[in-house]
Image 1 (tube, protein in one colour):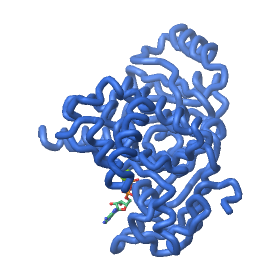
Image 2 (cartoon, rainbow, N blue to C red):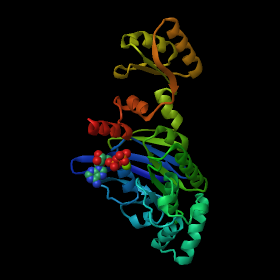
Image 3 (cartoon, protein in one colour):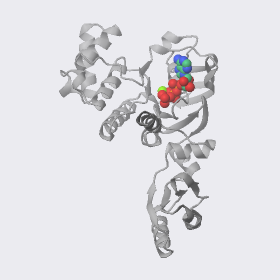
Image 4 (tube, rainbow, N blue to C red):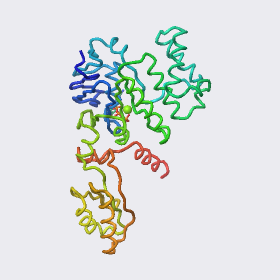
Length: 330
Ligand SMILES: Nc1ncnc2c1ncn2[C@@H]1O[C@H](COP(=O)(O)OP(=O)(O)OP(=O)(O)O)[C@@H](O)[C@H]1O
Ligand SMILES: [Mg+2]
């Protein structure tokens, strides 16, 4: 009995030495939906996915996947799930078709059925034309789609996707999103981890935000964006001394207190009527003769969500890479 939930987890605990990778993590994923698990580096996303897919043992709490207890009946769970890890699992040397047939045999499908299943999946993931090409010649997006196809060999009822689009260009990302949508339309439930609010927003009907091993929010994408106040207006001033004046102007069009980022000379705030807010702020600042470096509207980011929910910022992979690149350059 699933009670309408493909995944239910309560108070999951996982420790690695002193580190609490999961620290009382709760999750409920409705059947037939895409559920986003959104969080920054090290939040515990992969740990949660690995526990739910029975690859690692939990230290506390309990969970059911497809109505089955993960600790008591891990084999039965494994028969009903698919998993695409954070790093591609396909073999570079083989062609797309050979990869899928190999996975089919690993799952004991038998040669004939494995070939048949490979053909179906190559069609479904729009890889039929590239079936005979070596995977080393695939683009990032094609590789990810092949990865997805491989995790669908047994047509699982629940699919775990761990950061399926990290590192992909926008076009490849769009292709993977399309494949995920089609999977869900065909009845699969998907738990998708991501560091991008935009991705969770596009795909998921519900989002759990995870930080330091705990769920800190669980809402619809709109609900989540509403807690941080929808779209944002952002002004970067030329002179830091002008920040207080800009705060006043921005406050007039905002439904909340403007946030100030002193280091970047940036003032930003949530707005409901985005275009008129932008027009008014631009006009007022020009009238008052306040020099502006940049002004614009943007969608809320994971960082905005975090700032609001936890009071501290997240550090994205890109920033981390930029930091270490700076370190090496210095
Ligand atoms: N096998 C392990 N041994 C020791 N520590 C681990 C291990 N796996 C995870 N951790 C730690 O647990 C925490 C959560 O890691 P996890 O990989 O689940 O995060 P994540 O949300 O998937 O991050 P990312 O976005 O970087 O993939 C991190 O602090 C990580 O260093
Ligand atoms: Mg991870």
